[in-house]
Length: 419
Ligand SMILES: C=CC1=C(C)c2cc3[nH]c(cc4nc(cc5[nH]c(cc1n2)c(C)c5CCC(=O)O)C(CCC(=O)O)=C4C)c(C)c3C=C
Ligand SMILES: [Fe+2]
Image (cartoon, rainbow, N blue to C red; front, side, top):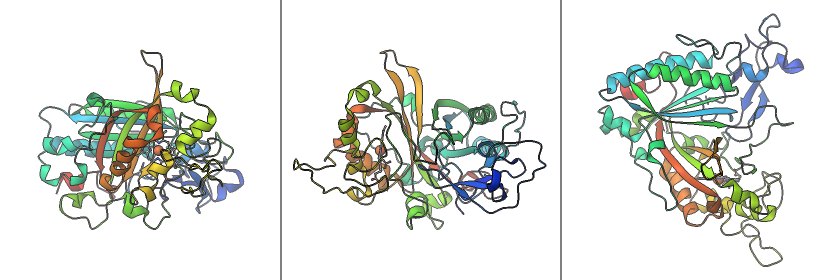
C-alpha cells in the first residue's frame, strides 16, 4: 500500500462540502506534480457532525504504512524543512527516545488530534493533509555509534562546479519535512516537533516553503514554480511499472541497507532563482531554456503537456527545436541512462537580499532508491551545460536516508535504533 493510497477524508469531520460526491468521499491521488483528486469508495459522510470542514481541512494522510507519508503525497501548499543536530552527549538512546516522541506527535497531529501540551495553534482545523517525514543524515551514524549500519547510498554527494553551498544551512544529523494544506496546521506541527526535541537535539537550519493552494485552479494541474514554469510534468508516476524500484529501497534489502526497506533517499537543495535576470529574458528565450512552452508546459516540438519530447526535431532554421542545452533535454531519463527521481519541491521566498534582489527560489527535494542512480548523474550533467544554470544558484544541500513507514505500534527508525 502506498501512502497516497492512504490519504483520505476524515469522515468524522466532513460535512456536506463535497456535495453530491459526498457519498463517495475524496482522496488525493497521483504522486508529486499534478495532484489529481480521485473518488474513493467509503461510507456516507455523517451529516450530523457539527464540525463542518472543507475537503481541504478534512483530508488525512496516514502515519502508518509501508512508506512514510510525504513522499508520494500530492504537493501541499505549505512546507517546513528542519534539520537538527543531536546535542553534545546525546547518543543512540536519546535519539531512539526522540524518534519515539516525534512519531507519537506526528501520528496524533496527522490524524487532526492534539499533541501533548498542545499549543492550540491548529484548533478548529482538520488534518489538512499534514505529513511529517523523518530522515537521518550521514553524521547521525557517527554520533549514535551506528557507523556500521550507514548505507553507502548516504555517502556525501560530490561537489558540483556551480555549487555555492552554505555549510550552516546544509546537511544535519536529523531531517524533518512537514507539509500541510494549511499554514497554521504546518506551523503547529513545527512547534510541537521543535518542543519534542527538548535537550536531545538543536535546530541546525530551517527552511519554509509553499505551493499553490488546493482549489486555486479550475481543475487540478501540475504546479508552477516562481519562474512561472509548469514544473513536475516528467515525474515518474506511481502507476509506472518501475516506480517502486526507482523510488523505494526494496523489501529484501540486505547489509547496511536492511533497515531501509521501504525507505527512500531525499536530496534537498535550496536553489535560489535569479529572478531579476530571468524576468528580463523574452518569452521565446525562456522557453528555449527549458525546451517547453511556458503557458501549458507542452514540449516546443508540439503536442500537449504530456506529449513526449521529440529530441531530434529540427526547425526550418536547421537548428534543434529543443536546444542542446535545454533543461528538459539534459535532465530527461533517456539522456541519463534511465536515471530518474521523484521531484517534490516547495517554492520559497525569504524577502529581499542585501543586494536588492529577491531571496526566492525552489526548495528542490527529490526522492530515489539510490542517489547515485537518480540525482547525482543528472546534476553532474546539468552542472556542465544546462541553460538554466545562468538563472539559478545552489545555496544549500542535504542528503538524508528516510526509513520506511512505521508499522502499527512502531516508531519511525525503530528498525535502525533498536535492532
Ligand atoms: C538534478 C536534478 C534537477 C535539478 C537540480 C533541477 C532544478 C530545476 N528544475 C527546474 C525546472 C524544471 N525542471 C523540469 C524537468 C526536470 N528537471 C529534472 C531534474 C532537475 N531539475 C528532471 C529529472 C526533469 C524531468 C525531465 C524529463 O522527465 O523529461 C521542467 C520541465 C517540466 C517537468 O518535467 O517537470 C522544469 C520547468 C527549475 C526551475 C530548477 C531549479 C530551480
Ligand atoms: Fe528541473
